[in-house]
Length: 415
Ligand SMILES: *Cc1c(COP(=O)(O)O)cnc(C)c1O
Image (cartoon, rainbow, N blue to C red; front, side):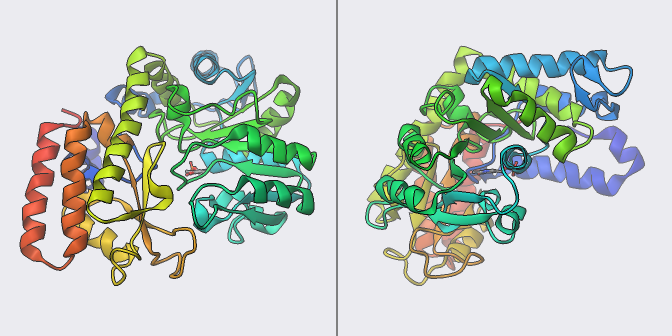
């Protein structure tokens, strides 16, 4: 990837772009929401469809010349339908947040009530955080995980649903390492006669690959990001029953967006096609197996894992019991120095702040894409442990940095 055309026009951006490829090649991407898309998806996203205005939907556009845009969007929809099995799919949201926005805009009035997971327990900004439009337009109550077990407290959620009487119950999380029981959340929503929005942003790929149960057919609305575990073009998606199809389509366009990002929709179509291949199910299973291997090994090293392990693609480490003087930010910085890229994260019962919380969140989707197996992951876990144990020891860091480079070279990216 030499970006020769960019380089002719703009060497500064060309440098940044090629440095970014080098960074991805030579570091371990363990941010749980990240992945490495294929070169086919990159090419589709970088295509001339970026030039095309296609406001509207296939066959019903506001502009001429949409025959290929239509084809691409129809393919993305067909494939998404096959992957997740919903009656109706909208592939136009620019992001996962805008997919959620479409559902709220379609179904709620300002002042209506949202019951969602507490951000520090793994919720998402777009589920009612005060800094997000959802926290300002709607009345929000939050549920959380049981502080003892780290699992969602479904009984408390049910009780809250009855007491708060929300208009929508939101499920689906950014930092929850366990299988979600969609039926129990649906029962809570039913008890309040509320809609149920299942936001599977993180686990779209695990659901498509059969490694996590699907909320499709349970929840009224299922939203997602298309660039996380599903590894397709960057953006969002909304799925629903036929009865809500028109409302959702209108809420995406013209309700919340103008022209769709057709090049990203092409990236979605191509990524979805890849996810329909049988190898993708193996990828989803391996992603989970790798997260389990990571969790087990870190436990052996004395780390405290929220909920005691993982069922999905991520591990949430609470540093307080094992490393009381090391914040999540300290760990993030020290690991970044050696090429292990992950993020500091709040943990249930957080006693520090959102900016410098007490945990780290570690994901396996991107490494699994590169071909890492459990043995490789054990080496990675050993590296994480050494660095977090002695974040200021430059000899340890130099040694670990070398191991990280060896792992990267053994599992090359964008060759
Ligand atoms: C990542 C995420 C989103 C938002 O996705 P963007 O594409 O970044 O807007 C929404 N919900 C949850 C639970 C997420 O983890």
